[in-house]
Length: 373
Image (cartoon, rainbow, N blue to C red):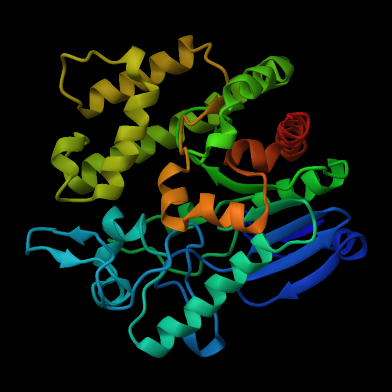
């Protein structure tokens, strides 16, 4: 249905999708397709700000971050030991690639820009993406904002650029469109993939009040798909354990520590990764012991041996709540007449090897939302 490269990045439409869907719009950054009463928005560009070709009109844009100011204040500053720096599009570009280490930039701004003309061009692409999302005639919108190809070579500032691809999400989105019945409500699903250690599907509520019933719906999904997910849990463990062990060893070798408090001035991106892991491993770690490599590796192995926790979670990896604030999501949904939006983080393992199962879980979630008064 879709064409993907060996890393799982979306490259374009496959023959089946071309015949089944109407191509509404296409450019170097995303494709927009209408398939019955569903709309797919499939990202094609990299989210990394220096992974671009300005001459070809291909920009590095993270659509799940705020439209930045050019040179004025965003409300954030970053200090890596040389004094506070205003976080905006110009400084993001000025300090690349060093700024990629720091979530003050990467978690808040959609793109970097060295000139005002570049800034304006990227603003147009960003606004177009959300125009197709909010103003869709189809009630169900499934967007994969970060499914695009990464061309950037590794370096000391970002040694694993392909980790920025939300890999294999385009195939899951296409599978969802095949399964979905006509919708009664207007729902946006923002679909991502991740290799963070934890669940296979994590549902984020974006902090929206209309998502207050998600705990009950997630419990229902856990029961419905418990057997199917339990059957692949051992294979998931064989995939995610060595990957996470290698990530921890690299962080220790690169930064000299895995202690979040000591990583703050070195890489807030690495600190965030460790914090996320500690949250999952909480019952397998001694709270009175410092966080070191041996303790985390031991906790990982113990968790893989003993964990019986559900593999579908709510707000376990990324709730989307900060993103919702950055995007002014609640107001935009209300203005557009959209009932709700959900963030879905899918394990790359699940999206790559079991896309039909991932799609079945997501479409069951949408069906449950459709049944709410």
